[in-house]
Image (cartoon, rainbow, N blue to C red; front, side, top):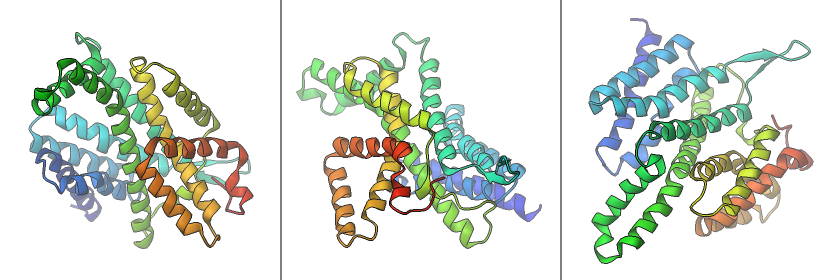
Length: 312
């Protein structure tokens, strides 16, 4: 068996083992499972379409055998194997410009595609439960309400437990999709660092710090941001979920702009520490402010004005 194929299959097996930790409820699962996509990306960004597909298929098969269920295997495929394969192939795609020079897919395009994929995944879940008596939101609310009833429900009124379950259910899909996008960004950065060190990267650097998003995505994010706060709390489950997903790319660009603002400024490190501390303490106001800055960056080009490299 050729060495590259062995590496590809081994990466798929390792990815499946990382992801399988979620089945054990072990504490280390929270530290290791987020890196389940990393072995697949390492193969995808350094190999061919064949080796990338082999690693993805190996991961799906092995995790399916470990979990013993098609549903679990489908979850692994949808959240790890398929996006790893698709994003890897997209990252290595080259297209000529008007002058005939070849350009690889930019980091902004990759992250936009990943964001749309996360939103599409939520739509698929919604459609999968469409034939159910109460739909995706109510099904999720019922599951959360049952869990709350077994823990805090004994000392609370049923109406209070139901209301709390509804509030949690409203935010869970968007929060999980957002967390997936954060993990993906981290895995892409680690993949690039490792493959560059090993001299196996098959494309120029992704330049995550220079990432530029399509203006239509920034406009869509602004509309979603307004909807998130204007719509009633019990209205538009899908709309609010999409808003939470769309926040992430512009939020990341906004954070990068804050880093540029603090660069070369003596109090800069302390200001950055303060920003992250405030983000940790009062999440939403800081997240919204950084997101708005990220939206504005698509037009004002703050990084260029501060003397940084040309965004890509």
